[in-house]
Length: 154
Image 1 (cartoon, rainbow, N blue to C red):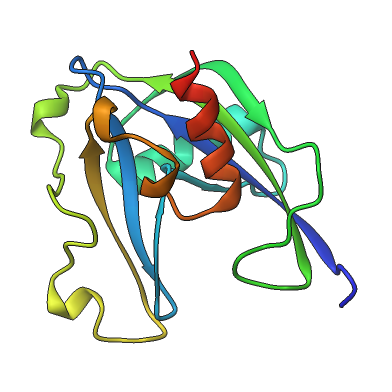
Image 2 (image 1 turned 30 degrees about the vertical axis):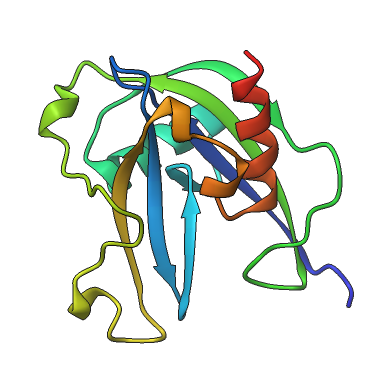
């Protein structure tokens, strides 16, 4: 299949004071994924502004975008559209918000029944993962797995 477009995605890595990592469990068109918070770059938007917007939309948090971690440098087919190529960019983020007040779940894919009732719908819930439990198996997307491995080596 020929590639018809390139999609740029920007993700943020947020640690709390206990070195837990914030992840997003998502239900998208009938499938379940765990990924880092973030999303698609819009036309006219810089990568850091994209990440600030996406974090606000997904978590309600205002974040400061920090150090660049990783950008894909190889071909990666989109998990959602076989004719799209994905370029993913990752940054560390931080916030002044009291993270104890952030609405999160404890177990993976802890959705309410109405959040996953429509197989064509989309929902997300946030979850902290303990550093000791943080490994490549806790995320779904192939590029995220590379970033997890990089983070664990820091």
